[in-house]
Image 1 (cartoon, rainbow, N blue to C red):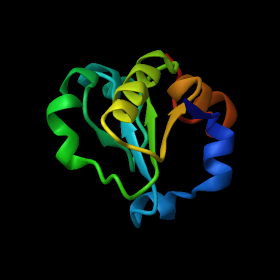
Image 2 (image 1 turned 120 degrees about the vertical axis):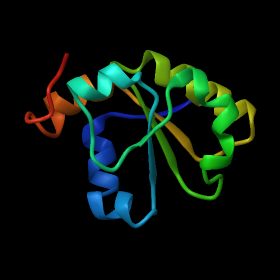
Image 3 (image 1 turned 90 degrees about the vertical axis):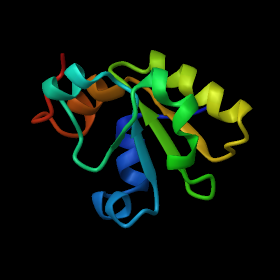
Length: 109
C-alpha cells in the first residue's frame, strides 16, 4: 500500500491541483467529524458508502484517501486497490497529522 504523510502530499500537490482535478482527495470520515475539522477541496464519502460510490471516483487520476488518523483510510485504500484503482494512497496520520505538519489552523480532534 502506498502512503504519504500530509507534508509529502502537499509538497506533491497544491490546492490548485485539488480544485483543477489533478488529484482527488477523498475524506472517508463521518459527517460529524467534518463539522470538527475539514479540508476545503476534499470529496466526502463516508467509509461505509465508498463501495456504492465508486462511480464518483476517477480511476485515471491519483487518489489520496484520508480520515482522522489513517486507520480507516488504509482500509479504504486496500479496498480500492482490490477494485482496480492503481494510483491510490493512504494519507498517513490523517487530518490530525495535517494539522501538525501542514496547517495548524485545521483543528485536530
